[in-house]
Structures are given as C-alpha cells and as structure tokens.
Length: 416
Image (cartoon, rainbow, N blue to C red; front, side, top):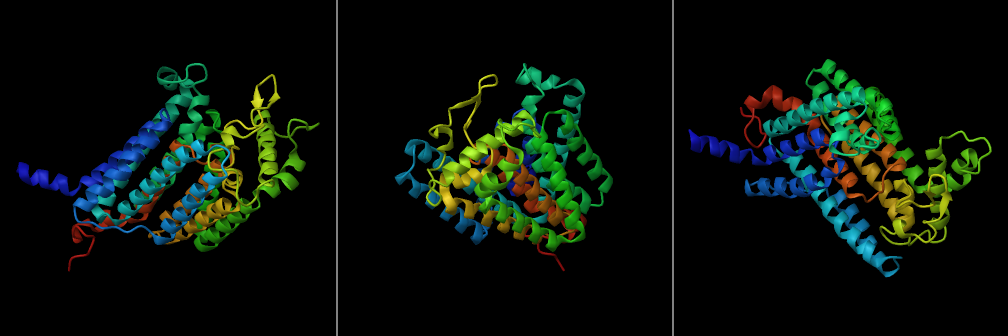
C-alpha cells in the first residue's frame, strides 16, 4: 500500500508543487506581498524540473521566448551607456531569472495532465476563498491582522500592494468556478475580494478590478473584438506614452501648479513624476538611459513639496510604459507593446467560455496596475504577474478535467 501511495504522490509532484505555490500565493499575498518572488523563484524551477524528471518535455511558446530574449539582450547592451552600470547589471540578472521562471512555470502548468490541472486549480480557488475571508476581516477591523504582522502605524495602507496581487489572481479563480457551473460561488468570491478595496486605500487595485471586470463582461459577449480593442489600445498607449503625458494629460489636469486641482495630491504628484520622465525620455528616445536607472536619475531627488517630502522621481516613474521608454528607449516600449498583443492572442487560445474572457480581464487589470503603481522591474510584482499568468494558463482546462478525468490517461489522451 505504501509503495503504491509513494508512486502516486511521486507521479503528481509537479501538480502538488504548483498547487502549493498557488495556494500559498493567494493566502499570503495580502499580508506578505513580497513573498511572491521567493515563491516564483522556487516553483519556477521545481515544477519544470519535477515534470522533466517525470518524462514531460513542455516547450515554451517561441514568440514569448524570442521577445524576452530580445528585450533582455537590448537591456544588457545598454550597459554601454547606462547611468549606473552596476544597478543595471544587478537588475538584469534578477529580471532574466524571473522571466525565465515565469515562462517555464506557465509552460509546464499548461502541459500537465488534466487531473493535475484540476488539482492545481482547486488549490487556487481554495486559497482565494481564504484570502477573501482575510480581506473581509481586515476591512471590518481596520487592518487589525496587518497591524499584528506588519505596518502598525497605517495597517490599511500597507495592504494595498497585496490587494493588487489578489486582483491578478482573481481572474483564473473566477474562470475555474464559472466554467465548472459554480457561477454563484464566482460572484460571491468576486464581491468579497473587490468590494472591500474601496475601504482598503487600494485605489489602483479597485480601478484595476473594475476595468478588468468590464473587459471580462465585454469578452463574454464579443471575445475576439475585445481582445483586438484591448491589445490595440494598450499598444498605442504604450508607444505614445511620453507624448500623451506632455501634450494631453499634464496640460489637461496639471500638477502641483494647477490653480484648480481636479486630482487628489497623489494624482498631482504622479503627473509631476510623469512629466519629468517624459521630458527625459525625449532627450534620449531610442537608446534610453539604462535598465533600473530611474531610481538614481539626476534631478529625481529634488523635493517638489516640502510639507510632504514628495520627490521628483521617487525610485521609479509609477508607470511601466514610461519606465520602459526612460530606461530602454523605443525598443523597450515596443517590446512592452508586443507583449500585450501576445498575451491577448494567448488569451483567445484558452478553451472554455469564461477562461478567455477572464484572461482578457486579467490583462486589462494588470495594465491598470502597471501604469499607475509599481516599478516595472520590482521583483515581487514581476513574480506575482508570472504566477497569475501560470494560473490563467490552466484555468480553461480545469472544467474538462473534472468532468472527464476518469476517461483520460496520464498524458491527457482520452481512452477509447
């Protein structure tokens, strides 16, 4: 009995490891968002290696591999003109590993047998259910749990990074539930995650959830049209980002100098950062200034508002498109635009009805967060996106595994 059990466990080790990664990421995200990088670092190596030892030979999508190779090759070449070569090389090594780990994790997850996909999918849903309970508790208590384990001075504010990870993980969980005819459970989960965001000071996360929800609903009605509109809008916006800031957004809303400010203080500060970044982009539009140099950019340390200590460039532009432009020039921005197109195309290839729509919702939500909040190369953010994409890559396949797993062998081939 024991040898049979050991063999059964050994055969499912890749799926069990993936399931653990999904579950832990969902449960720990709200209170320990930086755990995303270690989880991806381990799972991105362990899951493919275990699958390889078991005889599986999944192959990454060539287009993504080529795009990442070109992007990182260009970034490495930028050492020749980087403002801070040491910072560039350090970030280059981190980013290469995270991109490789995310690609291998998603590739291996997609190639798992149907029953294993179902196991990992159920772990994600269970983790998100627990996460939803934690979100509700934190909202009701004003961040009491976070005050115990982290930021005691402003526990609610300290939850906003973790809430963005939950927004990214929400879409594959919804797809798994919806495609398994558990629509009520999907609606309850979405409400429990999204509604409290209005009280957790997570404006970017809330806006991302609303935008992603709109894309999800549109995609349910017109999947291909939604994908084309989303990809085209995002690609054009990324390529035109510095010009939109200088000639439309900043003149329309103004920054700290605006006489009649429409935006809150944080929004005004964002515009000042974006204007500064856009002006520096136009000084070196093709080559950029070097990977990860935004944090040390000359003039970035200037204080704009003595009362708050708001800086001209606090570590990064708080906009991925502008950071791609600033640090990697036009090739970097173009790579970002192409990546969105590739992800939208990949979303359309997912089976089922809800999974493609959820994937497009995830892309829309991720773009909102990336263009408003975090540094483009922050390890925890890249890792969270990688784990979320891996979860989405199996979402559309879980339903079929559950309904017909008894009729399939370990390779996913239907037995006759």
